Image 1 (cartoon, rainbow, N blue to C red):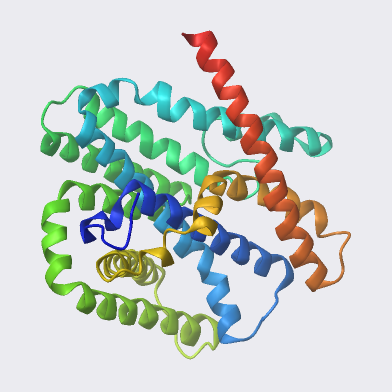
Image 2 (cartoon, rainbow, N blue to C red):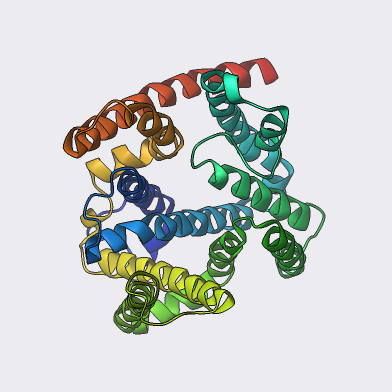
Length: 336
């Protein structure tokens, strides 16, 4: 457990990243509530909320890539051998549950094509469920790249090549191709963690300032160009700017986390609230679409929608987490 006296190099520990997920799931929930209600619309804060979900999900992808590769560095090829069974299968079964729920609730308008793509790739009936399909792709690429290769550098080259192929494939299909970059960034940070530690030790404050200003510059560009219409940006240039802003916000999170651990402010990150939210972060992300879509037609008041949507999402997340835990434990007993 991290304390005030703990080494600053714990800034990306499992405990810290676990708690960061708690804050991130709230950011995603706020973003989706903004999309439903438009609260603070036509304000700078509203424009910020409109982009907040994408930034939060980018950090989610980064944490996933970092965590997967750190586990590989710790446990070696044995981790990769059991990766599909222990990491991918439990998450896929959780995702299948939500596919089933959405299929039942929308059976009247459901097509076989939608079911097939939901179970595989190319779109999903699960609201905001594109994250799951993307993470499954990245997990499979990671598994293929490192399953039969001894050296981690060679494995990363294979991973990078396969990721480039997927990037092109996803781009032409109109998918969420930019999500490749934060996941890969997470692997890179894990691969060169010792070098990153040295950089943070000497330049963490400068990195915090520069990354925040870079991120804010892209946000202002978004407001001035897309909202105010002062000038136009070519789509390819905007994609580059989005990737740059995601890297900037990730760099800011890393450096801010380092500063918190170094200067005794770790309780800003690791505390009972963030631990509790981190515990249910996956379920909060997965079920919020179900709650918000179900409530929206019946609650005309924005305030009541925000209150009821938040409470019911968290409540359902807690119930589902308990249920998934029981199911996983029973499945593990049967498998053994």
